[in-house]
Image (tube, rainbow, N blue to C red):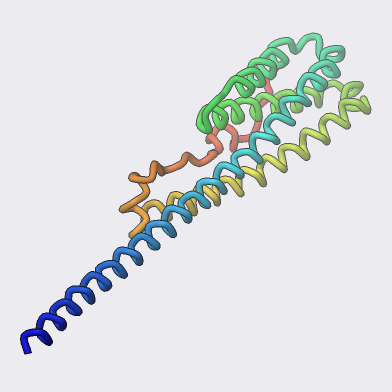
Length: 196
């Protein structure tokens, strides 16, 4: 009888070890799934940002050609041309999402002003080179807007995930924190005002 009881106790202890081992295995699997989900979402945000960055670079590359085309016609608009150049330089030097968003908003505003002022120069508007560059920039602006929307959607999904249970319990531990949206400033939403 004593032997049987010892065997039952040994089996009970073995059962507890198996049960604890199973629980630990399930918890480890859950942690792996949480970690992998956070990595996937972070990579989506990074990819979406890269798409914006490509379009911002493309637009910045088009601006010198636009400036050369415009210079010959707009000799009296030196201030507008300097502002566009300054805004482009700021965009090229910006490093963080917030800095790039701010520089992008500044550049978008100066380009709106440039195109508004160009309306006063019929020969410039008739230039094929100017028309082509204006169309390319307009297409790039549309791509930036689309990429901005995709980026912000990715940021929303990522930020929501790291704030909900159980992800919020482990996000900080795995080095994940909220990402910044690529936002439009109020000044970019307003109509361009041209004054002479």
